[in-house]
Image (cartoon, rainbow over all chains, first blue to last red; front, side, top):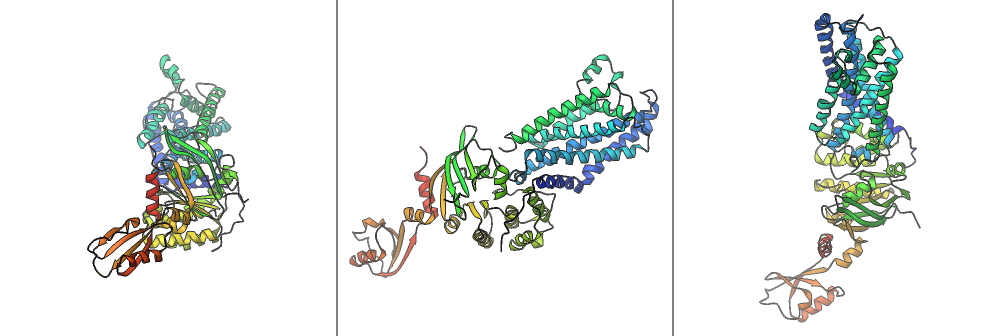
Amino acid sequence: MNIPRNQRFHSWLPFYTLLQKEVRRFIRVASQTLVTPVITASLYLFIFGATLGERIQLLEGFSYAQFVIPGLILMGVINNSFSNVASSLFMSRYLGNIVDLLVTPVTPAQFILAYTLAAMIRGLAVGIIVWLISGLFATLPWAHPFAVVLMALLASFLFAQFGIIAAIHADNFDSLAMYTNFIILPLIYLGGVFYPISILPPFWAGLSHLNPLFYLIDGFRYALLGVGDLPFALSFGLAFALAVCLFGWAAHLINKSHRLRN
Amino acid sequence: MTTPALDIIHLNKTYNGHHAVDDISFSIEPGEIFGLLGPNGAGKSTTINMISGVTRIDKGTITVFGYDNQKAYRTTRRMIGVMHQEVVIDNFFTIDQTLRFHAGYYGIPDDPQWRTTLIDRLGLRPHLHKVMIKLSGGLKRRFMIAKALIHKPNLLILDEPTAGVDVELRHTLWEFIREINHQGTTILLTTHYLEEAEQMCKRIAIMNHGKLITLEETHRLLQQFGARRVMVRLNRPYPELPNGLDAFSVEPLDPFSLRLTLPNQMTVSELLIVLQRLDLPIVDLETERAGLEDIFLQITQSKEPT
């Protein structure tokens, strides 16, 4: 046996490998990671697009299906970006195989980028499939296509960061589930997926302005339909600022926190 | 002077006020097999985790072949391969896929020839397409060694590599590790099987309660603490122990046999003369040296902190 020692180090190979592993991980369990969220979204589409939706009109000039589809697409993007990184990273910590990564030359930036990008790919894949299926119920005008892409990318990035934070802070499965059940779900449902904030009484409308999801959903709906409760620049600006803050927090956890390298 | 493979200087780690590693310093020479021993909770795994980067260092420095493992962590981590004590499972990928990923994490493109060598030498070929959870305990250990070596590290750290492994596999693993060492890989190992450390290691450090209490060449350690004992068998039962054997801490084993501890400078032939003078008819004689096991107990017990 002869150990070959002359080997070249490829600085970004650790990143590509981790990204590839993360993407292959969710594809391997596609029935849970892609099919289930698409079925859930399709059920919503069926209920609000084909049944109830025909009896509701909230926005002048648009059917209820058209109103609700942007929110449902974004809901798929958000949920799946979050879940991908939260479950993968938490499981790695829980099972202990995270040490296999911690002993390698993967930099903190590569670590965050790989997990984030894989989460964004899953979130956006679900979003695209939901959008394709939504074509059965309504067509969307795609008023500002560039802004559509921008908001979807921003939403998936933001929730990937939140997923990293949750995975590193959670100590057990219950606390991880709490992030989904007590933070993400209420924020989504109260963030204007199913109704415009403008129809709420002033107090609840004011409270909804504290919900970061409101800005993402409103901005995304504006980009797709051309109408929204807020100017697009404000929605995008606030969501962007929040994404930067969460990225900083996630970076701190990966880089300095004792929770990962205790 | 050659650069040490590993140089640890005043290393400290505290968990909630408890000194898991308390100001330890030692170096390992390139090409050496170095044993780090100690009872459970002595701080061995914490030390290893600080070397490999899993645990943050509170105080002190660690250099690997001259590179600081905090400032130049990308360089040092590439040089180190670690086999952790705990078996960690990844249920998503087969062991073949995991090995390929692992090389990539180290920034090394897949080297099929080296991967094949590891797979074959460690007997993993029939199991390549299984996920790790389906492997037996011994196979998991072998796979973990392959994973630690996939990027051809210069320093291989083995934390209890043979824990829970049957005798035959232990033998195979050590043979393999010796071969890796002959190829120029420096080895740091911890083990609970002290006879393994005795056979494998050139030098041995013993830790207890987070402190380094002994660091010595293995043969010196055995010389220093390893009292020789002689078992003699007589051709008739002795009614009572004759006087004149006080210096030998005699232990009667049965009516025909005695165990004597030989004073440091005395030879066996001198002992035989003494026994002949006392008219003890010897049929058989067996000498034994205190193993590392006894030494380890002597040292850890005598140096208990007060």
